[in-house]
Amino acid sequence: AQKITQTQPGMFVQEKEAVTLDCTYDTSDQSYGLFWYKQPSSGEMIFLIYQGSYDEQNATEGRYSLNFQKARKSANLVISASQLGDSAMYFCAMREGNTGNQFYFGTGTSLTVIP
Amino acid sequence: DAGITQSPRYKITETGRQVTLMCHQTWSHSYMFWYRQDLGHGLRLIYYSAAADITDKGEVPDGYVVSRSKTENFPLTLESATRSQTSVYFCASRAFFRGTEAFFGQGTRLTVV
Image 1 (cartoon, rainbow over the protein chains, first blue to last red):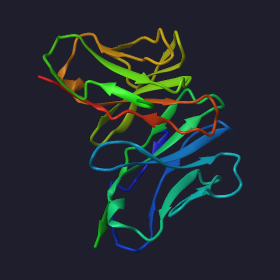
Image 2: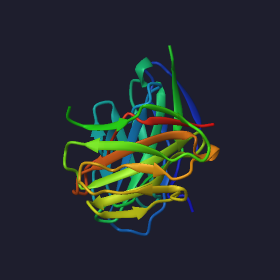
Image 3: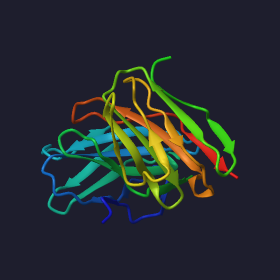
Image 4: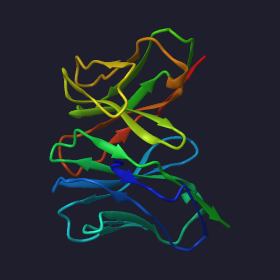
């Protein structure tokens, strides 16, 4: 079974609008971490935001927030006030267990911001 | 330079040849990982290492060998390259603590002809 599922291969958003990128995960561990990365066309992987499974508040980092719904096993990324520079691939990832030996990624969502 | 670096950035090799991709990190991170990125598959874990001399298989280990004799280095070897191993390879490292993210190298684009 897929550990991380991203069902939106491609998304479009108007500049200055908000957009939600979906991510669901599958684990039986009680302790895990969820991460979002951005990959622009240049290819590097840029860390955006982290949510721990025991964190009660949704994580926020500037224009990025993570909508964490534990019972539904979802960890959606919300980008507010989209900018042209947000056009990129976005990957959801999960660290399982306490030690984090396994770090799984989804297939990614390609976001295009339209001027 | 501080950080995580991969070499080479680009490599073309022939089917059947052995090729080694290098990864070096300067943070003394405990964990290191090798991923391959292919269209439609995202990043798939090939091998990972929790410390020097401790390595384990990920999701797609067949055809690959790793070693980690020193904390800072984690080379990936394709023993006999096949066309299906044409991909972009990323090395990553992270610290031991639960909440820390993985830091990625710039990637190596490998083409097997």
